[in-house]
Length: 278
Image 1 (cartoon, rainbow, N blue to C red):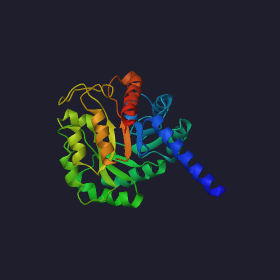
Image 2 (cartoon, rainbow, N blue to C red):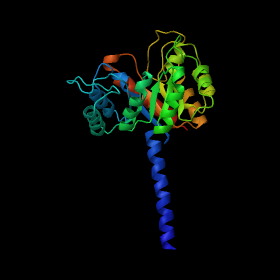
Image 3 (cartoon, one colour):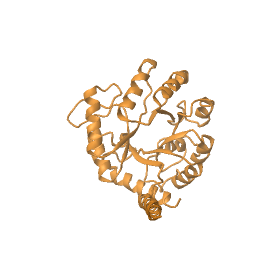
Image 4 (tube, rainbow, N blue to C red):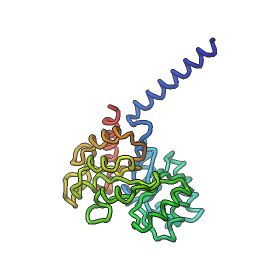
């Protein structure tokens, strides 16, 4: 009897601790709030991790071509050598940050297996791409083989995936591992409402490139801290919560390149404030 009571009390305390931890973080348990390393494209991958660690970020999306260290020449390309991969892993461990996504990468057919091997070596969950439509069968097969997700990304009009109807149509009947990386800022640049787009793609959203912009329907609009622009970030988060979204948010701040960290932190604080209300 006492043992049963102890187990019940322990379970209740564990649930309470979990609830408190999630409430303090302000982020739902199934959401991974991180940053696209491209936000710090003027710096090395190591410097990007150092910056993210300084504001408590635990997740990162790598992009191809960033120098791994300030002094070296090796990059985060999917063709990285075993030595380079080990260096990347060592830096991730040093700064206590998990690699969760990689992209945007759109290789030729013969290089797609290399992309998946790179992702698997780093424990990456989502490969972000703007692959050619005739590569869908090939990539779907690799998704199933490696159990790694692929997310179709949208650059602004006139890029192929600019309108949500395009990936929605191409993904019909395909593996649930095939989905989208919703870049809400590029949707705004293209005159697409992010809420409408998310609703059209419900069930297929694997990740997001999070932005807020100072203009709508303007290609040259630039990033501003989330909640101060035209992207309706709060509405986006509420819609994703309604959908039961589970996945990755990559802050991709493409303005004030030399000193964007304070604005990234302000954006993430806003994200946590909004999501803490769920």
